[in-house]
Length: 430
Image (cartoon, rainbow, N blue to C red; front, side, top):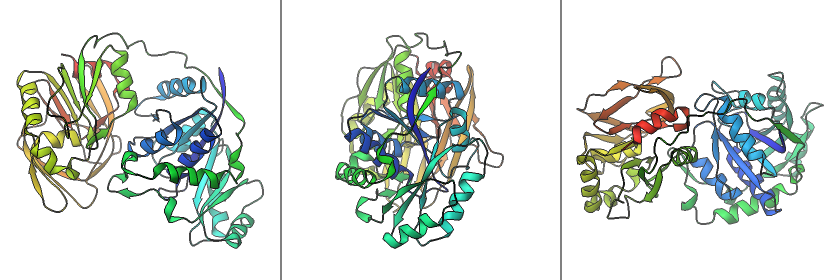
């Protein structure tokens, strides 16, 4: 077993500042010379980009449904072997979802830091804190942090509102200059925020004046009894081109690690900027923001020809969400601007001004079930018949079409490949 200080950062709802506080906490302790390893609860790509820049270490997802408890336990144990501090950012509100952030915190005995946005409230702050800390037994709290406070008097009212037994850890003042910018799908990508490091350092300095400046007590992390033995070299010497740029960036680090562990050679390339496809056996097109770069993608005729040649040669392509949109005949953004895409999948998609589908999904392949999630604002129209429909975890949610033709696999689902390494290997095999 390993012992390492750990904090689970959660809140009563989305939009309370979990990512900002987690990133600031990571930067605070990193600036003090500590090795900080951060995890994100649930499916997410944008928050981990911020958290990775804040901590200086890769960020992994923890999801009891997508990855399973054993997988999560192994990731935490590995981190505890080399970290001075482990941080986990929750998803939505503390008790939202199945499984919830609370389920994850209880499963591994990690104490919760509750972040509460105190904008436009006073004594009600205490009621919310009381509800969070008393709603479920077996859930440990290190304390409460107030976010977006207006003044010293405001801080005093908030602190006085807390019930006895609830630990006050401090407050962060209202500062628009420190807030992280966002757009549809979530936060702006870390590499697009020019002043991200100064923002993080400024937030870390504020946090240094709170009780979070020191490490919490250590948590005991136990290795899983059984570690999966499925990581045989199914992809030995298989060369996989992975699209990676400002368009195609929604990819789990655990996916890349798994492909490499199975023997694959990963080659990063940019469909946006490169004119040649690397000499590879398989192609991985993850999700992202093709709708923000329509003209440049459409004008890259040499890349279009290269991917067409790859497909015509019967080589594997795995496309997720934005990667699938890139394979369509055309794509339209929210302003109605339309551009030609690769035209490998007949059809079109148009961006909507609201979310079209969201949730955890699975699909059955010949080698078993693969799990992931969907989260998109586009509406798809295609004459291509789906191989099957995905299965949402919640009744009443809309399934997604899964398209498989030859060695091409495309869908709106962002797959979590460690959920079934055998299926993952089959999708990318030459």
